Amino acid sequence: MWYVSTRGMAPRVDFEGALFSGYAPDGGLYMPEKLPQLDRDTLRQWSVVSYPSLVKELCSLFIGPELIPRDDLNDLIDRAFSRFRHKEVVHLSRLRNGLNVLELWHGVTYAFKDLSLCCATQFLQYFLEKRKKHITVVVGTSGDTGSAAIESVQGAENVDIIVLLPKGRCTKIQELQMTTVLRENVHVFGAEGSSDELDEPIKAVFADVAFVKEHSLMSLNSINWSRVLVQMAHHFFAYFRCAPTLDLHPPPPVEVVVPSGGAGSLAAGFIAQKMGLPIHLVAAVNYNDIIHRTIQRGDFSLSEAVKPTLASAMDIQVPYNMERIFWLLSGSDSQVTRALMEQFERTRSVSLPKELHSKLSEAVISQSVSDEAITQTMGRCWEENQYLLCPHSAVAVSYHYQQVDRRQPSPPRCCLAPASAAKFPEAVLAAGLTPETPAEILALEHKEARCTPMRKGDDWTRMLRGLIEDLSRQRQGRFRNAPA
Image 1: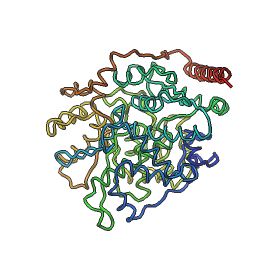
Image 2: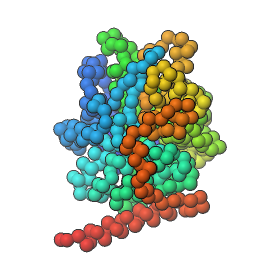
Image 3: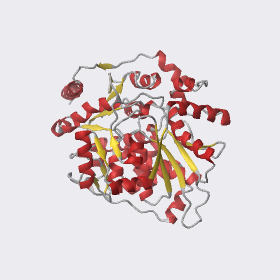
Image 4: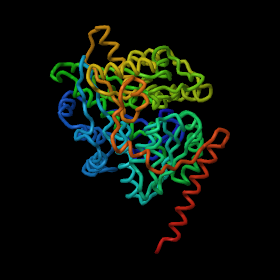
């Protein structure tokens, strides 16, 4: 299995190359050169397996056995999921009025990012140990990616991790999950800006190819192919748990509602669809609605500013993974994709070509949800089911309730739930409900925290480069002083 850049100007790489690169050298994102097609028999075989087994089957299609033999791959995935609180790893809650909620948040940090990042870092460690290498991982976060990435590599000898978080723009719990991990290999910056603004110094650092190579840098943001790969399993699992039967020909569809910020899970759904999974996709967004506007009107452009919402992890203006979707829908046309994305990077505003917009609006529907609708949805779900939704899950469930109230016939529907309500007590209180906070989350308030401020007016790129250089110097010093 080979991977090519969506912009078509970089050499193709294998899975290891895509994993360690993040962005391709031409600024594009890696995608499989060819997508495997799944027949009805394969879907039927997969329909009865557990979530971890599904991840193993999918990963084995995209990671050649010459890179990671199948037995090793199985062991890595078992290890990745060993600390999840639910025995199924991912659990489907069937609630009233046909509401199916796929709980993706049973990992250590109570968010769906645990699923893909635990696997990605197991793959990383496997290659690093084999090659006897060290890397520095740089992550920008809107809330959940940072804590999940820290959790998956804290204490590792061959990985340093640097996380940039938007100070005051994620919840207190999200922030504490990052700043209270006082391990030698964990370094956290608190930036006075939005998650889009803190992505700028990261992109600037990664644009310096020689610097990236010299300091063995990589990113584990949602642009990394390994994360999209694991997220494909959410869609397969949702389909198999919600489809009434697989005996019909063609198999019946299931609607999957995807709360969307950076569009990683949405891109994963598009790929699953292209492989033959009969799902209908719905992109549900908050007030920051670039994905919604792109689907509705072909308007891929930034608003004046990111608006803080209750669904804070989706307060994103630049949904990087839309580039993968454009590439897929244009028939893997890297020229079209490159022209689009380069114009967007220059002007922050693009009107999709008519044909591409038409394909996009046929492939997915969308909805933008206000904070008021989020709290109403959380309240209704509690009233009907005694079930607490996090605000991001409520963005998806809001669409479900809208369809139910219209009494329109529809296929079975599954709403992806990216985080536990326990991480968002402020939103739970705003909905007039009582937060339920686990003891390990309450304990965070009493821990020592460590975070380096990035203030407005500081040169963030320079600060980031400076820390990376310091870490390299310290490593070289330790290496020189190590006993022979």
